[in-house]
Length: 239
Ligand SMILES: Cc1cc2nc3c(=O)[nH]c(=O)nc-3n(C[C@H](O)[C@H](O)[C@H](O)COP(=O)(O)O)c2cc1C
Image (cartoon, rainbow, N blue to C red; front, side, top):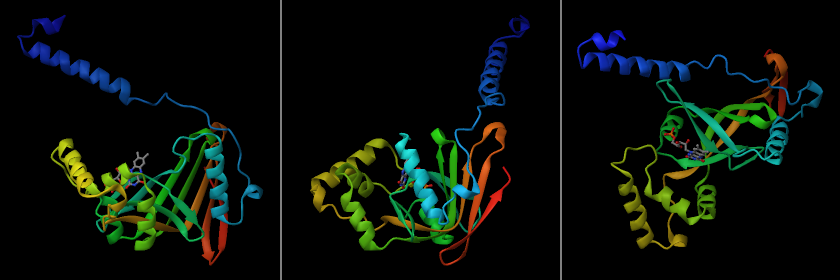
């Protein structure tokens, strides 16, 4: 082949580059990968008047159908600069006041929420072809609420939280493990204090959107927008 005629090492370099391009393009082109959605339908008459009840019913469905990490939500934030960032966190509890998760306040999300206390959370339940988007303002949980949850966590999780400044660089894994080891020697599991920068947040929803995948991509979507205390406008959205 003509590459053999090119003087070494350039022939080999071009060959490797072509092979790499072929690998990249075979996994980079996902246009033909598709599946149909259509396990259920969502009608206006099916919707609860209160979106929290609708959310709770869908979460229960996901759990009942064995969804792994049914409480995992993608949480989007943006700081003062406006550049968005997103990550998974686990929903730990929710009620009429909002949805709560726990983290390190010094993390990227913590920094961004301090600058701009609004977020959007997204749940995707593949088994039901369902997505829920929840948007609103965010506040920190009280110290007492954060401490109560911290103390309920398994001891390994507590040591890990205490050893880490989440999202800050670290030289290597050994450095983290040594910090955990030092904490284990200094504090019995029940005596380990909650790090002051570790705690919870609550998202107060002002908007929900429920998405039910349908055959042929003609999906069902409904938005709830808060009109006043406890009152929600419900609108069907185009897919
Ligand atoms: C399944 C799963 C669950 C997670 N749960 C949490 C969580 O509850 N709290 C948390 O701070 N990070 C959690 N993480 C890690 C975050 O996605 C993220 O890496 C971390 O919070 C740092 O994000 P940030 O730098 O954007 O603030 C989880 C990740 C995965 C994949």
